[in-house]
Image (cartoon, rainbow, N blue to C red; front, side):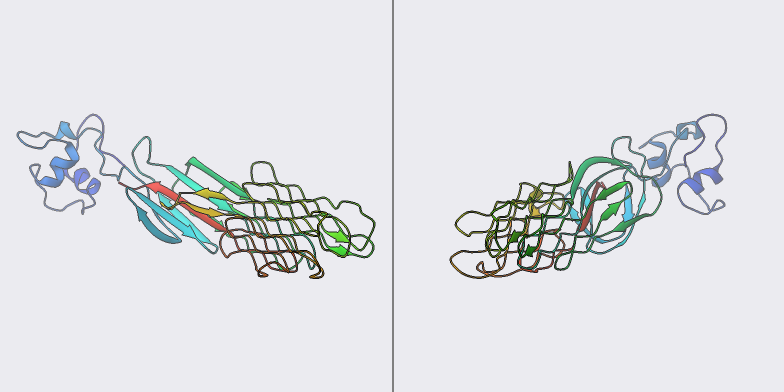
Length: 317
């Protein structure tokens, strides 16, 4: 709301613009009126108030865990909720936010490939209006399951694809997702098991797995790199690395792929998780799930994927 840009202006209208009762006592020479009219000192008239607005120039908002980074507010959603902005009058910053939307990472398959990271989407200039935006934070997939979608407004990130399984005689390919799961392994036959495909603009493909007792499966794809391939020396592929973002004010890497798992611990090793929280595959140094609220894939061998996260940032002063 703003005062009229021509004609008469009443003191009642000035009061309402300032957030007062319409009939409250008010003086044209008061600090509040001078600030609204843009007249710091000296004579002041009602025409000085043409088009004046007391609206905050920047966004204010509720929802999630709110932190401050200099002149910016950061809303972090580790679970589903609602982001409700009130836009401001500033032409550049009054309705613009930055976002990071990461879906849930996939679980690694039992004795199979590593889970792919959840889809990773980010941008710095997204317009919002005065309404509530439901936020969905995707959960991580359990063993052999894809991660779940995360959403903010029209932005939707796809859950990670689970790793391919171990089978006799043939294993299965990795599953497509935000980032693809690593390829599985069979009992014998020597044929490659393809990694799942990543979604364009969100993630990368999983690595290739090979045969022979599930001892060389592919790593899950990460937001920043493809998953590693299983090798002929019975070493499973590492998970693809995640991507770093400074949206909170500190650089944090998220959405790493899970390392490929192994069926037996005999002359080889599982893959390590990609940077950003990817889980290690079975028979590596440890057997781990994808890190919570990073959207990272779980390590092969049945480890769960990590839940996603939604982060929104805007200038507030």
